Image 1 (cartoon, helix red, strand yellow):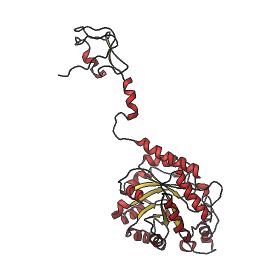
Image 2 (cartoon, helix red, strand yellow; image 1 turned 30 degrees about the vertical axis):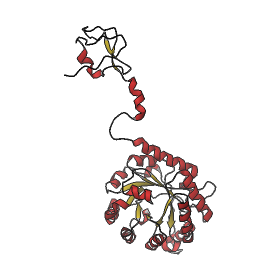
Image 3 (cartoon, helix red, strand yellow; image 1 turned 90 degrees about the vertical axis):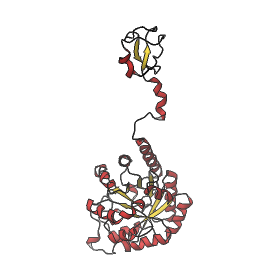
Length: 345
């Protein structure tokens, strides 16, 4: 996790893109491996799993209270336990998937949904742990992670400012190893619910920031780049399977475009101070300068008849033009020659 560690420590300022596997494996280990390869091919920096079981994230109950509200875009009316059971990434897969990602040169980590999951990940050798938006209020989990020697990334969907403030206080001693991601916890997320302007407030807490993206195109990510976001998390899926999360995920080719767009937006930010860019130096030649419009003899009075401001850049800067008018020429010039820069006394 050296790249992520350098970014969190602000030693390296560059986009860092995480491909979220989530439930897009559809319950098949080979699909999970294919997703990791797709992330590699798409240019992701890292892949992320989710570490939970249905029994550790909810209760196996058929009571009405455990039915997902009908207002949910994708899963309304479903029993929460059965949904989570379908979404599980089996714990027995983790070691193999971690090793496979590493073999491809990808950094890899996972979301821990409880303290036991965090302990399991630590024992697996994982050096970074994600906290989901849903668990920003899980203070025991935050307290545990704040005491551990792991990198921590925290999403902020559904959060109030006071809740983010509480979480930031818990990690205030770990600012060089912690990041907060702006997020909207709707699946998929409409552009009307993105609220990228909130990123200004998120940055004010003093941590590296990013954007956990549930939209369907790169627009929000581009805007987040402009606000200073560095870490981007996006769900990746395979083209030929339908899963719980595929409707708000990008396939390998869309994800590749997503990564390229983020980098293009980042590179477009450029410098803070104005000066000609390397690509502009060839155009400097075409700037106007003071040029002789007629043949000029030494001592001849300069006027708007015999000198003018014309392209290209052959002579003195136009700033000297008014100063030269009505003064005797110190030079003998042919028509079309650049007028030398006057001596400054």
